[in-house]
Length: 180
Ligand code: SAM
Image (cartoon, rainbow, N blue to C red; front, side, top):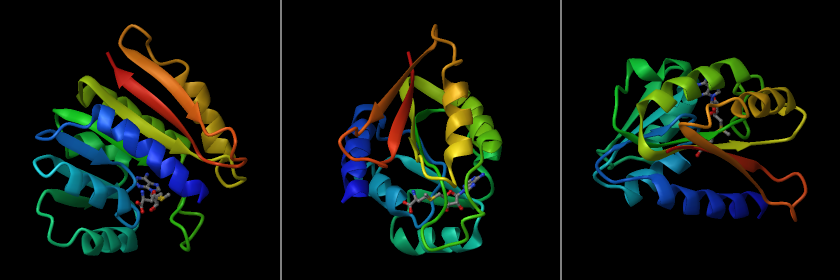
């Protein structure tokens, strides 16, 4: 139920920024749930999904079977600019680890920040990066470092905001980095 509430919120944010006919990045494709939503909602966009786990790429390909506007790449999102060169309306990061998989294979601040910096250069005006973060013990180090980092993003070019579902303790929260 908690996660469902966050998914509803994130989908409202996606609708504000994602545009059909552009590139949309799922930086942590996991089981492919977000990619499937994006591929269905934006049939003329190209959805590019990244994950470092073979199992995640296999699960995502299976989940998105029949959608020819999705490509999954077995590589870190820290290498995103090797695969996408421009025209990005939105990128989504669902940080943390894959449920029911190895918790050591979680996202890490260094590579997440490297990906954010590349994607900020690829975003169309009005485009955005949406990050969902968690406060649990496994994620707190990354979350703390990321919050410190996003506060330093140049305010002349980006609006950075945070949305917290404050009546649900322990719930994920979201940071939006919007290109002006
Ligand atoms: N959004 C996904 C879904 O719809 O199923 C769930 C994502 S899960 C919370 C986080 C994913 O990030 C895991 O599958 C993990 O393997 C992946 N990940 C961790 N480090 C990564 C990296 N450097 N680059 C890309 N993916 C990474």
